[in-house]
Image (cartoon, rainbow, N blue to C red; front, side, top):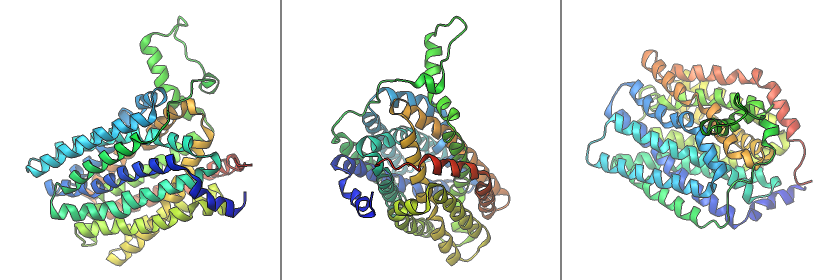
Length: 430
C-alpha cells in the first residue's frame, strides 16, 4: 500500500467509527475533568499523602476485583450495550458526588467510593470498546484508527479536560463532577446511535488455545463452569508468547505511572510552587506533545517499526521522570511534561494494534479484561507506594524510582520488541 493510500484511510474509516470516536471523546473528556478534580478535592480534605493516594488506589482496584468476570459479560452480551450501561453508572456517580460536594458533605471515604464506582465503569468500557474498533474498520486501518483514539484521548483526557477541570474546580468545587455527568450522558446517547450488533462471535476453537478444564469426575458443576469461563482470558494471555510478556511490561509502566500520578499534585504544588491551575496546565503541556505525537504515530510506526516505537516510548518516559525528580525550576517541569507526552501514543497505539490483530473475536473480551487485570494489577500498589515514598522522603523520589523501573525495560524487553516486529511484519492489506 502506498503512503498516499494510507493517508487516505483517515477519511474512509466510516460513519459508525466516527460515532464511536465521538462517544469515546465525550467519556474521556469527563475522565479528564475528574483527573484533576479528584486529587484537588482530596488535597482539600486532608494533607495526608497516603489518603490522597488512596483515591487513585480505589480508582484502579476494580481492574483487579471485577476485571475477569467483566470479560465474561463482554464475550457473552453486546459490547456496545455494556459500554452504554457503564456510562449510565458513571453519570449517576458523578452527579451524586457533585450534589454531595455542593452540600459540603464530602469526605475521603465518599470520594474513594465514587472513584471506585467510576473505575468499575472504566473496566467495562476499556474492555469492550477496543473490540468495537476492530469491528468497524479494516485490519490495515487499525494503526490509523487507534491513533485517532489516542489523539482524542490526549485532547479530551489530558489537553482540555484537566485545565478545564481545574478552572471549574476553582470556580465551584462541584462543577467538574456536574460537567462529567453531562458528558457521560452524551457518550451514552451517541453509542445508542451506532447501528449493528456487537456481540462476540460464537466460541470456536478456544479449547485448542487455552486447553480443556475438567473436574475429577470429568463433569463441570455450575461453579466450576463459571470459574473456567472467567479464567479463559487469563489462560489465553498467559499462554500467548507475545501477550504474556507484553502484559508484564505494561505492568511495570502502570506501576511507575500510577505511583507518579498519585503524587503529581504534591510535586507540582510543593516542589515547583504552582497552584491548582498550574497543576492542570502542566498536564495540558504534556497533552500538547501527546496530541502532536498521536497524529504522527502511525507514520512513525511504519518507518521505525513497532518494536522501535515501544523502545522510544520507554526512553521518553524515563528521561521525563528523571527530570521531574531532579529538577526544581518550574521551567524544567514544563520541559519534562513535553518529553513525557511523547511516550503514551508511541506505546499505546502499538499495544492496541497487537492485541486487535492477534486475538480472535470469541475470546477478545475475556482476553482484554485479563490483560488489563495482569497489566494494571499494580496500579493500586503503585499509587500506594507513591504515597508512602512521598510522605517519607518527598514526591521527587517517586519519579526517580519510576525512571529506574521503566528504564529497565530497555534491557528486559529486548526479546518482546523483536517478537512484536516479527508478528506484525505481515501487512494485513496485502
